Structures are given as structure tokens and as C-alpha cells.
Image: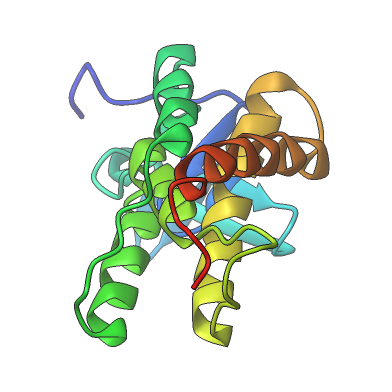
Amino acid sequence: MAAKALSFDVGDYVVYPKHGVGRVVELLKQEIAGMTLELYVLRFEKERMTLRVPTNKAESVGMRKLSSDKTMKEAMETLKGKPKVKRTMWSRRAQEYEAKINSGDLVSIAEVVRDLFRAEDQPEQSYSERQIFEAAASRLARELAAMEETDEKGALEKILDILRKAAAIWNKDKVPA
């Protein structure tokens, strides 16, 4: 095994790209098909899910420690930016958004949140837009909550507050028809 392989301790918060923030609850040695494997046992409270990841595969699946403060700041700055609305078909945009969410990259997730956010005075979102927005916002909020040692609800409120202030700035140029 490579000397620089990622190592996580029991109790560490980690980010698994497809599932978001989880916690290492156990390091386990298990015999599978005659081979002894070392596994990280991850617990994702929100999904009520437990995942076992071989320690030697943690890096290749994209598992990582929580983002640095610098990356989180960059993600929060991204939320303040002007939303980018592409004029491509929704199915193509939805795929791109899902890929960004599942990449586990905090700034990419923040882009999805920013682009899909709708203020109260803006037109309604479709059901699928709302679903993707909520998935991205939840993923971002869970990592922010773990970093600031707070709860997801408080972190989500902080994110929505930033988005509302940004929307007020970006939407003031638009004159109602």
C-alpha cells in the first residue's frame, strides 16, 4: 500500500462524493473471499446508512476529509455570485448538476445551489429543479455544519441568507414585465 494513502481515524468526519458527509465509526478487519481487508465503516445519519469502504480504496473513490476553511470560504463566495442560467435542455442541465453534486467538490456544489436558488419574488421552480436544489443545498449545509460544529438546519439557514442577499442584488436590475 502507498505510504501517502489517506488515513482517517474513528470519529473523523469524511466526505464521500456520492453520499456527502459521514463519520468514521469503526475500523474493521474482515475476511472476504479468503482475503483480509481493512475497512472504514462510515455512518451517514441523514440517510440512516452505513457504508464499508476498503482503506486502500478510500482515495480512488474520492473519499476525503472535510474541506479546508479556504475552500469553504470560496464556496460561500460562489453563492454570492451571479447565477448562471444555461439555455440548454433541462435534462442535460439536470445531468450536469447531478454530476457536480456527486463530484463531492464543494465549490461545484455551491454553483448548483446558486444557479438553482429562487427568491420569493421569482418564478416557481419545477419539481425536479427543486429536488436538485434541495439535494445540493443539503450536501453543502451538512459539510458547513460539520466544519462549524453546528446543526444542518442552522447551516442551511446561513446559506439561504447569503443567497437571499445575493438575489436582492442580482434581481434589482430586472424590471417586472
